[in-house]
Image (tube, rainbow over all chains, first blue to last red; front, top):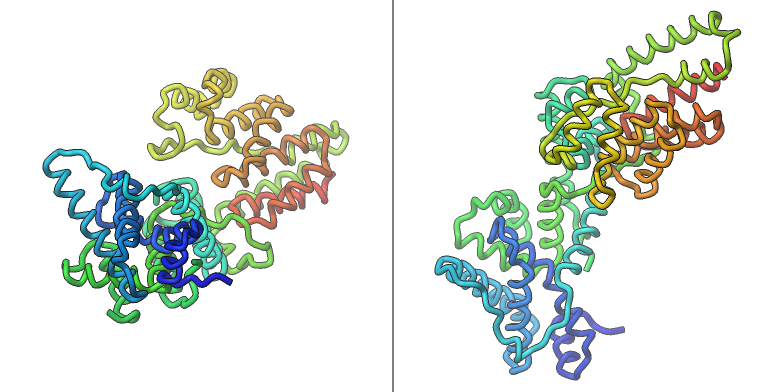
Amino acid sequence: MKSNTPMKLIDRLMANDESAQRELIKKFNSRMFVYFRLRIKGEEAYEDLVQEVFTSFFAAVKKNKVTEDQFIAPFIFGIAKRVMYNFFYKKKRSENIQKKGEAEFEISYDFEEDERLSNEKMNEIIRELIDKKLPDVDKIILKEFYLKENDVGEVAELIGKSRHYVSVRKERALKKIKNEILKTKDLYTG
Amino acid sequence: MTCKEFTSLTDSYLRGELPEEKQEAFELHYFECDGCFARLKAVERLYSKEVPIVTAVKQSAFAWSELWQWKPLLAAAAALLVVVLSSIFVIRHSGHMKLIYDISSFSPPVYIKSETRGPGAIETFAEAMRYYNQGDYTRALRILKQIPTPSLNPQVIFFKGVCFLLKDELKNAVTQLDIIIENMNAAYYDEAMYYKAIALLRMNKKDKALELLKHLTGMFSPYSPKAKELIEKIDNIL
């Protein structure tokens, strides 16, 4: 069975095992999307930025700059940070982001599709928690909010309660699920 | 940063309230720790408004103590039941179909305009819904039919189905509602099933209608109590 530690993956990559590149990207791709999404709110250039990080990372790998397991995550984080600052700098100067190092390392990977699948897995986990942990009235309230995008007034009308009641129950339900998530140890889906 | 500290800072990070130094330490931690990243991502998604909430639970999981939530609905249902039961003697000798129409009578689902719902911004749809809310289903349907097929969304299909049902064009109603059901469109799935069951019942396909209604009672939906009530009526009266 193939090992999943990043350094082992890099060794495999250096031995021309192409699947290792995909596994490495998969391991950090979602982190990158979350990082850029929360840092660069309201922008839609995430995929370009994620690609830029991986291009730089694999270029460094090719030059043997990455040699120890424990430094790989901080190394990638460092690149992501630089790419993010660069993005704001270029934006400030009203310049378009140019992809760097494309000739150095060609990456053929659907970053957004990977993130979409990762989100789906996470949604499934949240659905299960909601199903198991909330009473039906809270499920109805969340369903009306999320699926039908009804506002507080509409949900209140539907279930025959006050707006305040709906609002409080919704917040409590979300908080309850959030606390369940934070105390769950084995959420990581790989 | 420890995992415990990370957990305690998750809310502040998502709200963008951490000072830069702490924020970076937080970010570095989730780049390194699989478990903490998974929890952060789950919380982020929970608040992202993109999580499709579960729509189906077993009927046994229904908390009866929560039934009072449906007080107005149950009161209306009880009143309706009394009316239906007291009418039985009167309509005993009238046609079978009249009976079916009586027990499957319903108030058309209310359309509430919302900027974020479906094609609310499309003028044509808005116009159709104006007539719908006035009870002019013929005109509403005529306008709904004008909306080009590629731009159809579940909301348009659903109200088209309901308009057909209200106009007693039952086959057309079933066809439209089936599109919602087959595509498992979560926002209108349960409603579409309920109204399809009514259409089937009025087409004299009692068994198929019952099958659909029973399925609906096992779902988690505001339409489950309605389905249960209709099943009872069918069992008792038909």
